[in-house]
Image (tube, rainbow, N blue to C red):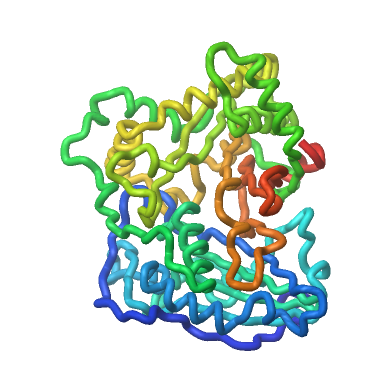
Length: 455
């Protein structure tokens, strides 16, 4: 038992259901949904009451949260459903049965800083709500597993924490934050600005696909393959997280440096910072020059596909992959690596995404089939030669005003890490004012100890 357990008090628990009853339905996954099987995306948002306020209800009233959630679930009904199997030995599916969102309200006997260091945050399952609903390994009983779990935590300092955790199989970050911003709109008495589209058949494999005969097979087989000429070793000190600051001034400097070294392309800020982090992590890992390093970045496929609307609810994200020998990566200027990343991103179009869907359907590539070790279908230690990027700086975290003000902090609560997380980083905005960002790197501890505090 966690020594802090005695400081927790459960104020209330409830299941929040949609106000509008629907006929229960089994919703099958798209191929891209199946790729993310078994993971929950967890975030929390800190709300501080105004000076002189009597209690946290002034900034984030529980009744307003639950009432607006019930109304929002009318449109986002998969989040009121359950992950379960229609029959024994069948594939797990999404059952949209309006079973409800587990919503817990808790109190912590201490101030925020006793439990959370917002500057160097370490994952905390107790504030996520997942600890109560889904402790340990994923086990399904007859009622199934909730697809969305919410917890509100009060601290003695007056801060109220809103934690949201959703199944990544049900929704990617774009759909998850689409729901959050819509929920906040409903709480403020406003109409939902973008109605979700639940037609997952938009991303089904093609009946006749060129992927089996074309170069895409070779490309995707290279993506999901261990780097050659690498002897995998276990990290000596496990894995953890380090958060680093990146100022707007520094971002502008990196972009200028990358474009100064680039040949023909006009490089974006994201590409130049990604190249900087790829080089930095690789350098601190002290790989040999002849070893292969790989950089992966998640991109949103919705704006790159003509028949997939912006409000598509589900998973529509793709991995782009850049590879380079360590010696080349570290000896050439920043613009060289940024140009390689730029070229990989530029290739992501309708045809490549459709090819990827077809390739996944043929190869039956699911995380559950490889021991829940993402990106590398064989030895997860291969991640020690890769860097993975999740850019979340455009997600509307700081627009989540439920009627009492915007959050002061938005933090990704990544936990249950293992070697599959090594080299992965998430970039989030630091506030509602465009400018500085925070970069949280998940990696082996001996790497994290050698990373700077600022980039």
